[in-house]
Image (cartoon, rainbow, N blue to C red; front, side, top):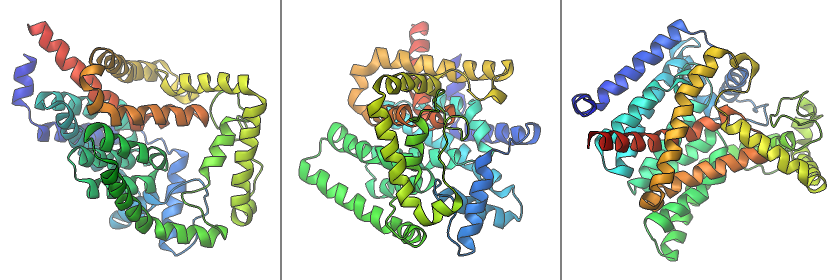
Length: 388
């Protein structure tokens, strides 16, 4: 029965179905007006009016995306429609990526269907935050790496860093895993590819570096979020593993500090965080476990999403995907070790980053497509065994 369904349905129908779901959700589910939305809106306005971006913690990519789309539609729905389309295209990217890894179209269809129905994907697609665009660019780049289209993959992952800086941390490890573990390149060839990547990286990031030099009177490669978040997660006020100002941390800087002493404060945050870790190793380990639990827990931590409905939806969707992906990993790690190593590296490094800094289920969303891909294979295999 499932075989017949998967053989009859095609990926375009799944993508269209994902669009209908997201559009209906936009109509019937109230937009949450998340705090970052107004920040990105301001970033776009500052960039296109020739001003310096005031926030020290956000990258400019999503603000540019938002401004352009809202300018085209002349209202605030432009970015929402754009994100919905990008979310639907991500369904297609996941389909292609799954086929590239496992060589079965029906596994790709299962993964695409799960992502099309996935509540977190739907939620982020119409709430005007950076996750949807970031996930699309990141997985489009990974697909290109699997297809050996490295140049396009380099450009896409650099663009993803412009949206969220997390990819800047794991990008070198991701590339090395492809070069050494999948393609078995020689050291000489790896160095050549890394040279090409970092030349492109330097070219594409040079406008941002010039902006930051004007802003801070010094070189800032990405932004000042590294020290800020490191201190957020490692200070005497943090008991929850989150990073809410006034609850988990008191950074003690003003807009004037950001403008005139931003680099100095960045260094201070890092120094204070490292000193706190050094002086409180047991507390650091305890907090890391709290952050790990918060990062991977089955339902959101925020009070407004702790109701029965949200818990049920999250456990039934993410919880099952997590379970099936773990079962896949246990039963297939030897079979697919090299093939999935880049994806596993992303999971491990993303988890480690947020166990050291601050944790939230929102920060987990960019690795959930990987869990969906793994879960799709496990479901396909179990259903095949049941038929046999």
